[in-house]
Image (cartoon, rainbow, N blue to C red; front, side, top):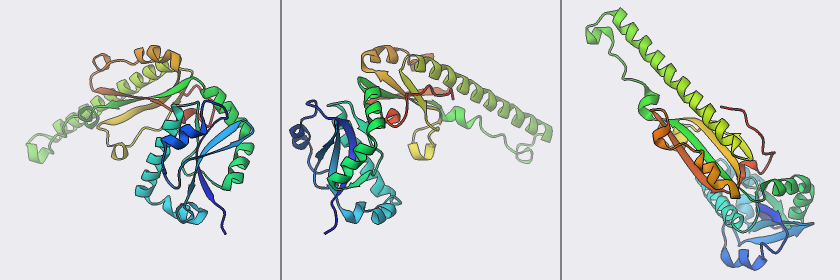
Length: 266
């Protein structure tokens, strides 16, 4: 008989803040047979038995190439982490973390005890906020391309002059957007206990209009939430052609696997 596979969503401190009945009563099966708590030496993993047909090593490797399947797993993963994160300080584990049986989970907790304990200490009483800055589509695209000389009836010199002016205008806009992003990030980082910058989101993947010039996450003590949000400029105070998006509060995914570092400015 093959060993049971357990998908592990998150790790918490063992304690009364997360009674077993609360998780089990609030949550039916998510990816498999329903949530289960596995404890070891002061840490508790939130796990769920899952099918070997999907999550054993070989099938999982193939499944990870299926973006629709992966999106479903990601939604389930984030849903459980968000639910548990409302109950206690939570370290979310990476997507598709699978262990072999309760002993495998306990072994993972033992091997990761030091960084997990450090992360729980760092994340206690905090929440994550995301801030993104975009150039609006019209500004990102620049002015309409000038017609070719033959079509417009103008001279080649006029055509080139127009092209050069358009490129300079686009460069100026990009410079202003980068400077605004640096200033905004420096200000928000000073109001947070940690900050990270992620690679700009590609428009085709995010479906957000415009070009992403700042994609940052901030670790904010819950008690300082208002002061942090007061530092986010409203739309009217941004330079023309820029748009800001704020999301949160989230379980601090971006800070679960490393120090709350002082990220470099974009």
